[in-house]
Length: 488
Image: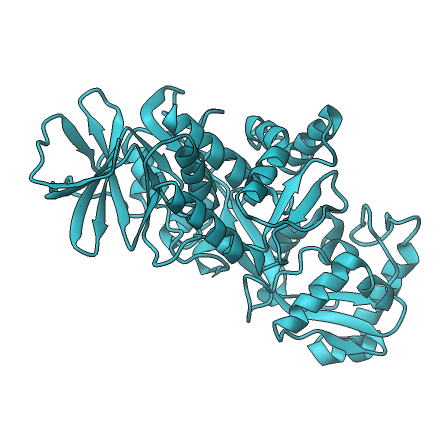
């Protein structure tokens, strides 16, 4: 089906799905509308309409155009990339191309999500990510060498030319390939509601653009509109009454548009409740996106304003970020010594902070370092000495709290501190219910024909915590599956 624009179309048989009849949770944040939006005079047509131009949306669009479909990507922002373009560009993958490695990968994500994540999506990630990274490479995206995400049984690869710099390059390459195959991007266009035909099949999107309302009609629609981290009302209704006060690290347009449109069409939602539905990281307040010391956290010790440790740092940066929420002033300081600073992962974080002009405090004693960042010197020194005494064979079982792995004594000058670190929302975990083909499901499991979803706002993959690189991998894998399914 070729793309075309028409006026005064025959609209018989098309029904717009307005946001009426929303469930109590959705109505609580004011998403309901009094009536269906008026029928617009203009239409655009393509085989597949994709809502959202982030990692999932671009993966779906590229896959669909490769299969010969005409595609229009709608994005309400004036740029490509959504939340994904602000990411470090880390993709998680199994530690090798074997069945055992894939099983280990999926089990690590299940374990860190307390067994309440989407095991089917984890299995798909494990099965397809290596081939999908090779697919991106064939489409002009460069990747760095493979590393390990300690202490997990998970490997990582970073988009070139490096952390925080590669994602804009990736999106430029994907856009060029999509447009070369006839795909189109319409920016500044906000999807408002889905359009169904008389059979109950989703066949389009009613959107608001620079010239008013427009219908984008096709055979199928892919929702890849991202999460709701920037929607205060949704955060307070679903997660916690105070969640809306958290810093938003990512895209300010992540307002849950896809969740609302899908539910208005009958879709079910999963994994939306409580703080377990939020990804929270402790970051530098002056650079909330790139000032993210994830790879240093497991190796260092984190000290609150009372000069005390409060979390097992080896659990990873999401568990660490959520723990910071409960600390005095909601602040923490990451402390490490010269030997820890020489670890490749930590050195990378330090180098990135310095490149960004963020503070990397340094002193010859723990007391002097504490004084520099406003911690009580005696209490901080006592905490470090007690931790050092508890370290044995790479763990600190007798420390308070214990550290399970990656425990190293903090004793060789100079000493370093990343300060201050504050909690911020990176992304949200809950989303529209989907199956392994990325088809959108009603709450009872019935398929909504013509509607697919992928990315941060779909599948409810993660719960409570995740391993860094998992979000981009999930968006890539499920986005490509959505594009394939939408064409099929």
